[in-house]
Every structure is written in C-alpha cells, then in structure tokens.
Image (cartoon, rainbow, N blue to C red):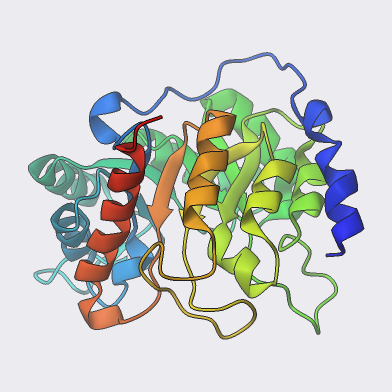
Length: 291
C-alpha cells in the first residue's frame, strides 16, 4: 500500500464511526483484563498440543482470555475428538469446565469459514452462543449478507481477519486495512476487523497506521512482534522486534479498544510458553507505566 493511500484512508475515520442500532456484545469483565486490555492467547499458538493443554499453557503464561480455532484435538485423553462448532454438548461442557478450572474466559473463535448458506453459518453462531463467545473471526467476505443477518439476531460480533499480502493472488484483498474498512463501512457495527498486526508487518505495512485506518471498527486483535519486516519474518517477544509494540498499544488505548488481544505466537512451537509470558509481561509493564 502506498503512503498516499494511508493518508487518504485516515480521512475515513469519521465515516467509520457512523451510529447504528442494536447493542454491541457484552463487554469483557475487568477481571479478565490486564491494565485495561483483555489479553490471552489464540489457541493456535499451541497447535501442537490439545485444547486442554492450550488452556493450561495460556494460564501458565499469565493470559486471562483465550481464542479457540477449529480442528484442534480436545485433550491428551481424547485425541480423536476434534474441537469445533460441531462439538457435542458433552464436549462443550468439558471445555467449559477446563476454562473454569484455570480461570480463563473464551472470547473468540476462528479463523473459521462462514458459509453463505444460512443453515451452515447458523451452526457457528449457535456454537458461539453456547460457549458465551462474543466474536467470531473469519475471512469469508463473500458471506457478509448472511453474516450481518446473524450478527443482528445473535448479537455476536464478526471480525474480518487478515493474512499477509499474496503477490500472485489479486483476489486476496483482506490483507489491506483500507479494503476491510471499505467493506464494513455500511454494515452493522458489530462487523469489523480482527486485526493481525504481524501479518501487516509481513505485508510491509505499519501496524499503527493500519489501526488508525480501522478506528471504530476494531473487534479483536492478533498481536505480534516480528524479527523483521516483510515475508518470512517470525514472532519474537514483544519489544524486541520491529512492530513498535508500545506504539500499537498506545493506539489501541487511544481508540478505547475493548475487544480481546490474542497472542498468536507462531514460533518455537514446542517450547514457546516463556516467550508468550514475556509478551504478556510487556503488556503488563506497559499498562503499569505512569501516565
């Protein structure tokens, strides 16, 4: 994205803040926040382990909330059971009990494909309601009409996620925050961005500028710091990379962001709990700074 695009995009902030009817999803309680930020892990951080282990590791690292993704095995005792929106009532009860055991709140589910078919999409929203999940993360921009109908019915938010730019795929557009801003501008305000700051860095974009473009439409955030700009970069503990983490947190705070921050730490897969804990410690230290 050219710098001029960013400048013009910033002018859309007031447009994005249009009023809407209908309440937003219930706010995340203060007990699940660190210095005002509801921070925890995207379970994909621990994708080599089970859902139960992801819950344990998130709590061990100091997280307060968790974002689930579809397809993870349930537990070491039941590795054949897969966790997704087709889960049985018994499986849902087991996951809820595990969350309660470790004092975590499930806040988000995705990235998941949402079909245009209402019956298929409804299954995802029903699952989110059963789990008490406030938002679903997707890249299914072709299903926005169905999504908007169900957002209004269920009062569950939907966040449009971004992966990195695909130079050989012009049809993949959600990497561009301006595209997402334009996409949701006239939609129910419970539809917005599931901002992945690391993938913006991989796309050679400045995450602070990207957040500004999406002001008023940030639903959730996959927060990452990376070792360098561009493709092939990998996650590093917050404050040790190129993503200007203090600036990102400053911008989220300025916007009054009240969604969840999910650490999706995609590096050192088998032993990344200490690094995740270091990231959460960075946020804790940031929020403890004098104003």
